Image (cartoon, rainbow, N blue to C red; front, top):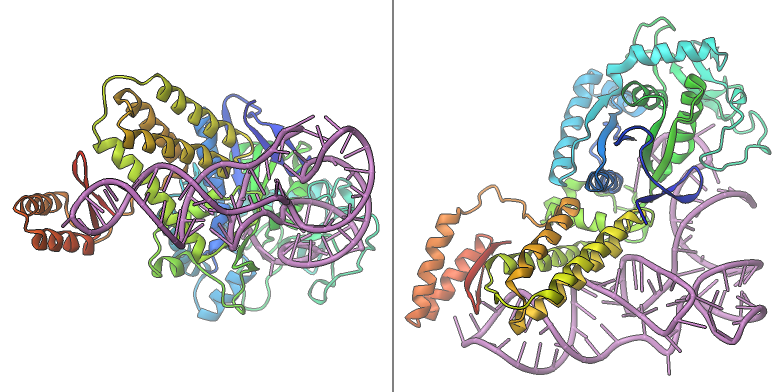
Length: 466
RNA sequence: GGCGCGGUAGCCAAGUGGUAAGGCAGAGGUCUGCAAAACCUUUACUCGCGGGUUCGAUUCCCGCCCGCGCCUCCA
């Protein structure tokens, strides 16, 4: 069986291949840069990264666009409160976001696009929607008229049949004709920043940026549109309404949504005190790889319960794989034998790949790797792990790490150099030979304090960075 | 109320109509100057509860209970 994904649109797992040539046109909803992104946001962004990497591993080219929402109500509110321009206010959080992504080893999309740099295109799209009769004006704002789009609800599978128009119109939006209508262009309020345009002064509504930027860079029909599950409605539903009204074509063939992240079993919220940014977690001394591993190890369609126990487990699990890698690199293995172990590596790889092909089942893919690691370790202990199996075993780890990307430790700023380590390791070995264990242990402790672990093995001394 | 997801060992978690992957933690052991690493043994006669279909269900159907999310701020 080949690559297949669950499609929110059809509520089924479907075979996946890009529609045109070999390149996957992927659009993912990025951050709104009004504050630091939190760990829940990064659950989704990590999912996007895994999706990218696995598509590439399966031989597809990528054209991935992610937006940065750098204008919205919260941003305006905060910027105005701090007396800053929108650009000044969002710049810092955009940079912080990119730094956080780099820490988590999230690949940069082919294009990272900002809403404020596409205002003319959005205005043009709104004009087109107006010409096609999908809009109405109210107090200087422009709204999308959902009545004109009968398929509304097809993504979120909400039946609006029984909902009375205007039944839940809230106070601020008294001017909407239908509760489902949404704003395309917002007239400015007193003191708010705005753009002067052909459809009047104002700023874009939230949804229009994604439709416009996706179509501009990827064409009228995307292969995959992905986001957090909470965006399904209304954001993605509205994107469909706008885009399909604009082009008359299906907006995205596959819709993929990452489930929510919970913290200690509850939704993150500031009032519960369980609200964490990536920075909060790293400050507590956890490695970014552990965060990445934890976020990646639970399949994306299952709610992920983020706990500090889980984070510790993730760190230990990574160590197990790193130790195995080190053993492959530093061990000595017999030249004879091998057939069965070559078969086992091939089997592990097949299990790994088939699990990921199955809607990115990362948990099952990890099991395939760990099972192999245990068997290989057992054979190494017995001295029966053949030299011929080393290269394929390393290839398995490479394939694993091309996706999970956790094997290389994040270097400390003040890291001790390799040569200094080697010098100390040599001195310790000499001390040991002279049976000066006190000195040997002191050196080992010193290295440990500086983040280096020494291990004596049958094949000699080896070291690793923590 | 509507829509969606889920309830599997102490924790995280995969999975299939035929008798429960993997990781972490715990206990015991092997190895070792001491460690570390690694390995071995051990932790679910059972997969929320009650019915049904079946030779057989954790896996299918029905009902119920519980948790979470969305229902126009939200990854």
